[in-house]
Length: 357
Image 1 (cartoon, helix red, strand yellow):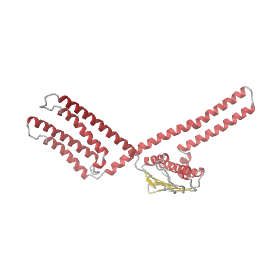
Image 2 (tube, helix red, strand yellow; image 1 turned 180 degrees about the horizontal axis):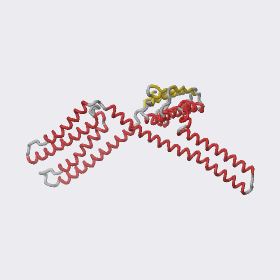
Image 3 (cartoon, helix red, strand yellow; image 1 turned 90 degrees about the horizontal axis):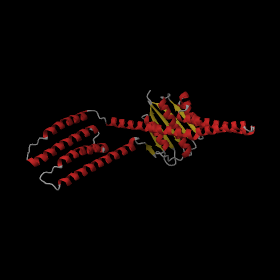
Image 4 (cartoon, one colour; image 1 turned 60 degrees about the vertical axis):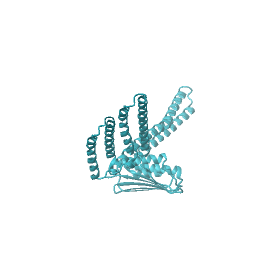
C-alpha cells in the first residue's frame, strides 16, 4: 500500500466550499421570498404594470454575481487553467451587468414600445476590457502551477501552526500530569518529614520520607528531560542529526541501524528530519513488531531524504495522528512524505526535505 499524502488543504477546502454553497442557498432563499412577497402585494392591484420587476431586478443582480462567484470558487473544472479564476470572475461579472442592462431595456421596451437597443453601448464598454484581459491571459506564460503552489504553501503553513498548537497542548498536558504532580508529591513528602522532625523526631520515618522525596525528584527530573528531548534534544543542536538519531537508536528496544551521509542541513530541516526518524521509530515499536529497523539519511542535490524501513507486519495507518503530525512538519518546509506499508510489511516512511545551501 503506497500513500502519497494529498495537500493538507483538502479538508479545509471542502469545508470552505460547503460554506459558500450554504451562503448562496441562503441568499437565493431570501431573494426568492422577497420576490414572492412583492408579487403577492402586486396581485390584488391593477395588473397593467408589473412594478415588482424593478425591485426583483435589483435583488436578482447581486444574486447572479454571487452565483457565478460561487461556481468559479467551488467548480474548478468550469475554469480552463490557462484563463484562471480572475478572468472567469471578470468575464462573469461583466456578463451579468450586460444582462441586467438588456433586462432593463426589455422591460422599458415592452411598456413603451421603444425599440432602440441602447444596451449595445454599455455592453461594448464592458466587453473591451474583457477581451484585453483575455489577450493578456492567452499571451502570458501559464501560471496555474504557480497558483497551485501558492495555495499548497499557504495551507501547509496553516497546518504547521495547527501542529504547533497541538504540540503546545501536549507539553502543557505532560507538565500538568507528570512533572508537576511529582513535584507536588515531593513538596508534601518534605513537609511531612519536617513535621516529623518537629514533633516526634522519628528518624526512621523521616529517612523514609526523604527517600521518597529523592525518588520523586529523580522521576520529575527524568520526565522533564524526556519532555525537553521531545521539544528539541540538546544533542541535535550540539552534535547534529547523525548523533541525535544514533542516540534515539541506542534508547530504542529495537535493533536499529543508522546511516547518515552528506553535510549537516539547516536547523529547521534538521529538526524536522529528527522528528521524522523519532516518530517512525516510535510507531514501529508500538505497532509493527519488527525485528530490525533501518534509518537512512542522505543529503544530496539540495534535498535531505530520510528513510525509515522496518520489517514488521505493515499496514501502517497513513491517517493516524503520528503520521499526520509528520506530514504537517514536512509540508511546512515544502517537503513531501511518502508511506509504503503493505500488509505483512515491510513499512517504509520516506521524507523528502528541500535544503538548499
